[in-house]
Image 1 (cartoon, rainbow, N blue to C red):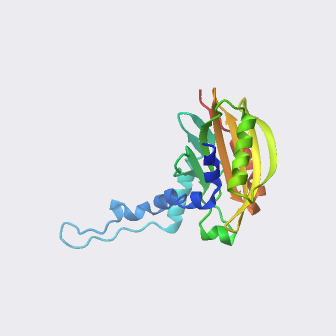
Image 2: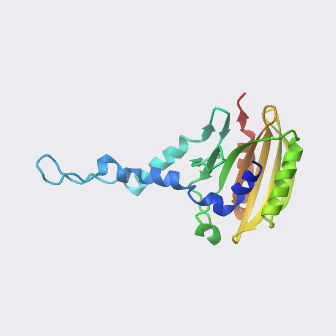
Length: 221
């Protein structure tokens, strides 16, 4: 599943639909029974209920985000950066989250509704080492996205587990991206991957939060 990392960084493949979860949450009140225009028992049209104001909808959305600051599954847990919340996952991805309130200034990124996101995947080492796995991921990225330039590699220990972080830059569809890939050893042959993706101009504002989020990853035994 190493190619899943490639899919996660392919802008077109991951940006479409990431905001759908939140858009549905934000607009769901419009379709609720309370807001359905009905007749009363006299046969006369009932008074149309007062619609939620945009401010109320934003407050409700903020509450949803606040209540979803951590992703917890049967296999792992991970804290999310402030203001982020879980989004609908893509095929082969265990969990995804986005910064819903982010303001992207890059005009090319705006065209495809890009927002910074993170994603978690599961894979196996297939008898190799974590270093071998990381090198395979890098080679696959270079082949699939020729503009990829690796800017940093470092070994980490995350909650007692051997891990490795890779920083990379690339350009797709005129969008300059910065990516952090973190791979974490699990039990036996298990390996977990976290992909953090943003536009290059926003990287410095996210760097610390991305590493803190990676360091919060806990594999449940």
